[in-house]
Image (cartoon, rainbow, N blue to C red):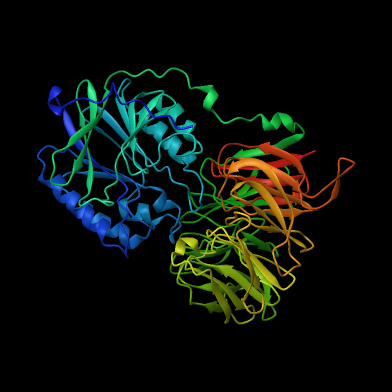
Length: 627
């Protein structure tokens, strides 16, 4: 539960009651958009207003500088920030990290970094990213950012006051691993955390640490916009809302001094009680990579392949988890590799598609593209060759000869980027892109057979993150419009669309193709009949995972559906009637559960009904087995 501090004892009556050592401005939730000129006008006004003030030492920007995370709007923001006559420091928000054709790498390219640390008049300011990476999920602080923050704070003299700057508040419901950050910050003389996200002035209690959220830079429905001025004195930190052309109005004062928050509160930590309910589910091994992981693992024979946030592809021993080799690319890997004929193939946000030797990690070929490559590849027979099918951010979907690395064909009519894994079915390849469309291409020459749209004008509703599934002449998808969609695989015509179940970007199919599964956004898992031309629910259960909108797919192995949630909870559910532990159980029976952490579980790699490989956004690779 979110806890809001009482402001009664904290709000001072006037700015003149205290001496001020220095002041700085905070801009947050700017939301520059190529289609709406108002946010840019609001930013210009704020910059002009800040420049007119005499005693602003610097400016902090706490995320959501753009609406859609596009580089063009980031550049517009930077041009405005450069007009400031004082230094500025910027971190990213969820709008820079959830949707991004660059794989969330453009922010660092434009602004230098999404984290900063500096000391001003004896106070250490530390800013870091709290946004999810390319997924609809809770906020998240990457393991490498936690390590960086520890290193920076350890450089400060003991007792140095610390002010942290984030986008999300560091609390349950906003950031999945909030405690990794607050447990660290409480060890130092942290005065408060400052951020935005909710577009209004609020004060939260983040495990004892004051977390101040400030108004958006946007005017919203008012005549003019505004921002925040923060004054730091010897005994207080004071927050004032500054509406353009008006005097600042103070709304909050926090005490300034030596802080002692005591021990963390164990009662608000994630519960692992579910592991006591299913004690036979065990981790065979766990490998902490140390940086974020945002895609599913892949396995071939005794090798496991995982790409990470630093652009490294790791090859691990399946039996022990020990690393065999690693291959470094120039930027984040955000896709799941495909393996065939001892070749490991994957894309990187550095703009290249790579093929490596499975046993040695030696590069066999590289295919360069003009932009990031985040689509998950599959292997198919194309023109009597084994081909890698993969989409990128350069408007293209390609078939590449896996032996030579040469392009067989290219479809170049995409208006958005690809992040999902395509489905190959009946000599066609199906996939969605972040351009509002779902595509069917001829597998042999890449020509367009049909494309379909759900008629939502915003690309945020695109059927792009889901891994489509096919059976009985039909294609099944779920998109952010929360509608279960069944299309004719040959024509693209709608067979049916139903909102009976609130689904979003999460789907799976039984091994015999008779049932399609989906994890609903609130607690429920359901099975639909894949054979009928109208929506028919075969079973539906309350799985009790709460609210979840993480686009991680449900995969079925030996009749068992295996998936994870945005908060680290793993499930094994009977997809059909089956025998489990010598008993007949109906479809929809929860066979096992296990909590591996509290962060996003990516699409898993199933080994069998009782075993799977897992990667999570906190940088762990896990082999899990239910005995």
